[in-house]
Each structure stands twice: as C-alpha cells, then as structure tokens.
Length: 310
Image (tube, rainbow, N blue to C red):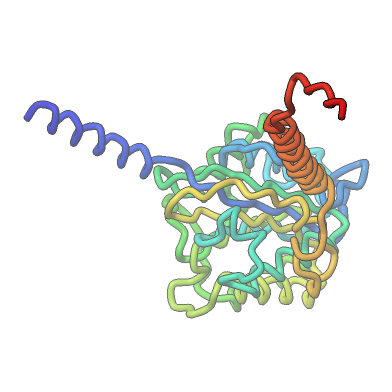
C-alpha cells in the first residue's frame, strides 16, 4: 500500500513538473529602415540562445535600439514615430518550420517582414510560462533595464491587455490606433515615440486571426507613411515542443519555396554523410565476416596419400 502511494506521489510530481515546463515561442523585431538602430546595419540577425521574456526585453533595448524610444533619455535622437509590441498567443517555435501553418497569414507576414526590412532580428527560442502575462514581463524588463528611467506614460494598450493603473489609455479598434498615428504624424513637436501594445486577440470585439490583424496593422502603418518598428512575441499555452532548428527557414527568401524540401546544407549535409558512411562500413564488415567464416568452414585434409604405383 505504501509503495502504491509513493508511486502516485511521483506521478503527481511528474505531471506538475511537465505542466510548469516553459513553452518555446519565437520573437521577431524589425523596422523597414534602420533609423540608426545599428551602426553595422543588422539585417536578418538570429539569436539561437534560449532566453526569458525579460532577457528579450533587455536585448530589444540594447541590441534593437529601443532604449532611445522607451527610456527617459533627454538627448536621445528619436527618429521613430510609432513602436509596436504585438503579443500573440498561439505561435510556438516548432510551428515556424512546418510546411502547413495553422495561421498562414501570420507566417507570411513575419517571414516577409523579416527578410525585406533593412533592420531585422529573430529570437527563435523564448521560454514562456503561464506564471506572468507577457505584457507585464516586457514592462518590468523595460523598467529594469532603462538606466535613465522608463517612460510608461507614452505607452497605450489594446483592450485585451491585462494591465492596470491610472491614466491608462486603451484602444478598442484599429480606427483608434490609426487616429493616434495620424495625429502623431501631424503634430509631434517633442519627437516622442508612441509605444502601442497589442495583446492576445487584439481587441475584445474582433473576430480576426493574429495574422490578419498583424497584416492589417502593417498595411496601415505603411499607408500612413509613419516611421515604425515592430516587435512580435508569442505566449502560447500547451505542451513544450522539441527545439526544431529554424535557421534554414529564416534564411529562405521567397514565399514560394518550401523550407526543408530538396535542400540539405550545413548540419544536414554532415549528418547525411555520416549516415551513408556508417551504412557502407556495416555492409563491408558483414562481407568481411562472411568471407572469413566461409574460409574457416572449408574442410581441407591436412595430409594427402601418396599415389599408388601400378
């Protein structure tokens, strides 16, 4: 009886550990123009390290150039009108390299934006959990890593964001965001960058997929002529998938080419060569052993009789 209870306790601990395991999700940062974010013109840069949402916020500030947008730096030269933080809830790291996408519009928009922008960075493995909302993780990450202070008063949110506080402005439709962008374009004497946070679902009374909403947002920003930069991140819930290499997918340049089909480069080529060599070695070894056994099986007499004289 005691052994049964012990086994049940071990199983419950295993289930709890599995449920608390982080889920890997990708993040993408891009801007159609460099806007002085990087002196060496960072384009299609991929960071393969597994990082936390707060570490992602730190990288966005330091490597992505957002410190001059959201931190209280008086002498910062802010050439960006709008910075978008788009937080999804479905995309996992393993989904990026799949041929069949659950949300094709999202995959196409991310891929096109990543490859066609002058400044683009990717973080394929962001470890997310359900312990804290992604928007709160980013806000705390920005606040912790802004040495000169964090300008939270210039941040607005969609009505699905789980944030609270005084004087928070929330958007209930894409028209509200479009009006904000156009107003900022027409009258922005201080050069302050507006940060808009899109949380899961975008708006409460909206029946659109993440891909459709992101595509509409990008199209609206392009049409307005605003200088913008976008950070996409995801906080999916579910089983933690295996880490699938995303390098070849992120390196693809066209939407018509399916990643992983008909191409074998780099690590794939090395592995295939090793497998082929192993098979050839096994076949040769089998042939050698078979030949030796056949030779050992030949029953040759050790002495021969002398021929009889007639």
